[in-house]
Length: 110
Image (cartoon, rainbow, N blue to C red; front, side):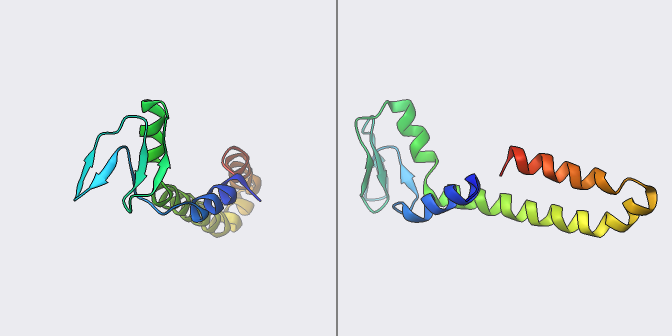
């Protein structure tokens, strides 16, 4: 399983987002330093460094799933571009340039 697939699976298994850095109540968020809550009032994390709590809240499953979807869409678009230009590259004698670029990208962002 790729790191991207692992991240997606973890996000799908987690308490749904959005998450907030504080306790949600009646449409507002009451500051509770070091705590992260779901909008359904499930405690996600407590007794956390306030900077880490802000980060955890900003990386809620809904945000992670949107980022994963964007990466997947970009990977698919890049594959189509590579497939569409393969014959042109072959005629120009540079058929491996685009494929090598995709391979390097996949190694950095699996």
